[in-house]
Length: 335
Length: 266
Image (cartoon, each protein chain N blue to C red):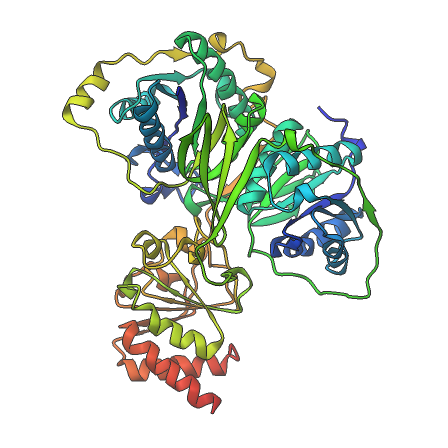
């Protein structure tokens, strides 16, 4: 077990690919800033990628005190061996007390590899972070059993304490362009022969990047939409509101929409200002992914649908009758 | 190709009830199933074996009851099954679980007299939802890993894996042996037949205990787990919102538009 007093500061890992940061890293700087202030320690952004010095600067603008930068051609695309290898070396050298990683597919691929290498604890897919008053440990809260139960986990004796946190749960903090901080460049390189997986081809199935996590307004369709065609009615309202269309798991299973659009425990977690659920029954797995929305509207034929329990405004009715009226009314309001 | 598939017996999370007083899972009356992602891992494993020859072995860590889940696997294509079970393993977090399972890999290899070329897991169990045991096993065993697989194809001593990503998929290759965790497949897992069920029922499932695995007790069970559950609670997401029932669509749509405007949501 690690000598706990050797370990200091909070790290947020900023995931990049092709030189671009994934939004979750910047989101996590916001709650991590509060934790660092409470603990009176440094908040450090860790950026691994190719040509990513700009990303490190951006992380400082979003609240990090400083950044550690690992830059190299082997980090253009994610591989387990290169990224986990670099992260392990960094943690070994700097001994952070806490490491927070975005729970993307790549974050959840790298995180356990690193924590297992260091023989420390990793809490998966968290939705809340706090400091335990009694011990000063991070209290990691996460949904379990498909969102039916929330569990708070701690890593009392091992360091660093690590966790992956769901994208879309936290909102980005204020961006301060003038904020400065040190960027420490670490010359870590992983030999090609040590990278045991190779990316052969990347296939895009979705025409444009689906950015549900950053959307201000989301209009989601469920089984009640009835067909892929049925989503046109949702899209018309979305066009008017500059909203993003999402869907429930049933829709993905039926093949009407790709998985990239799915909201819920096995899809994206979202917290927009307005969430309009159309023909979504509101299974707990779905609700777990959207209950953080500021306002929830539900339209469903079934008056007993559980989605009405979490809605601020519910309409028992046919979505194909209600939505066009709503679209027209909003057009009128705006005319 | 010799393939090991790690499976977990889980409660059907669609049927789960939480005790409102104790905030713990009510297990009574909730059906146990093979973790759905693991059924995909098994199916792709069995198909690779059918194509290339070799053996598919399934293991599961859990109580005696988990033998039922292993029987199910034997009825849909697995050749052999082992239960990994010991009181000393109880309360393990993902690090301890992956340590025990990776020790079990070696023990099963000895028992079977073979080496595994491929270790398959479901991407995550639907009860814990951590997705950590697969990658942690790969780290313990110092093997390459590919997570979130949508399909696996074998070619020239390598596997090619279709890996799920945000807006499509990546094609990734790796050498064997390797660990792959599976999300879904282009096809559904096969069903058992009466004949395969009967055969599975007759098959003996050996139990490997602490003593069989040569594990270090300091890294097993609750005591060997760096993470501790501090508490659980049932999320309360209910709101007392407006609900229009029996209101004609024109009127309902207009009321909603007005509500959105009054509350300055738009």
